[in-house]
Image 1 (cartoon, helix red, strand yellow):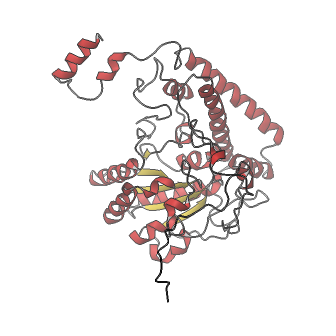
Image 2: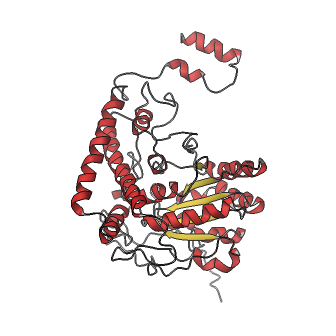
Length: 410
């Protein structure tokens, strides 16, 4: 019989705190290729176990194995490797620029490059992503100009958003990238609504919602699942589980569900977990989920199991809440190294060619940075016009805003 004495308040704790030895013994990693690939019209009730496993394609030897393998050619994989290396190089330059005072804020993708870069290649032109702040790979993998991204980060005179968004909060309708919101989780319900509207208008475009593990504790996440399941919205519901919110480990937001993917089961949504550091696995699962949505089979919830190697943002010091060496102990490895090794194993790549590609990509990124900085940075050069503060809100500017603009002299 339960103790009827004094109640005790429970607060989940991570396995290890700063100063301790990193421990990922609780992360059960199935053998690559061991998780089955169901048909897209499968009854969600028959694949409940996929919400508790991890779909993997690349094994320790760098081989692609199992039923989720074989969807991409060597040329497509080489392109994906370049996209991830480009994102990592872009991150390093922009993080340095922030430390130099050229921009106020930055957020890196270090260790998570495969998630957004591979996912983008599973979508079609016109599909819409509703991202959070760590999916710049969606833009890079779609050919969005790096100079334009940097202009937005610098909030300079060529910033397409006219300095009205926080750095790294990009927006591009042409590239299927809905404007990022600083209010966490709001984009999740917006993605479902956009997908419902697409279905109502008999269009062929689907949506993709993005959220981090910490933000799944927000009510919008659960509201989105209600609407997506009820109306069979053509949407892929992505949860990037990188183990840490800004300073709390993923167990705080996960609660007692065991996994984030398991949250979808109560809504009758097919839910899968995938190795987020395996480019091939991410693409295969994204393709499966997108095909379901496009075939009027409704939403799919996908949890990407990955690790945030860097700080949450340029304002964060992760050494305050996790061991410094924890990223080195992460059992799923580095997504760039894993894809590189796979391509070497296939005989289409080498360490020498990889080093050369890294140097070439760095040159491209540095050249783009120089071009962007000619338009200005946070404290130097051209700025957007103050007049832009009054534009882009109303189709016809109301009298009170016209008066304010006149008073401001712009």
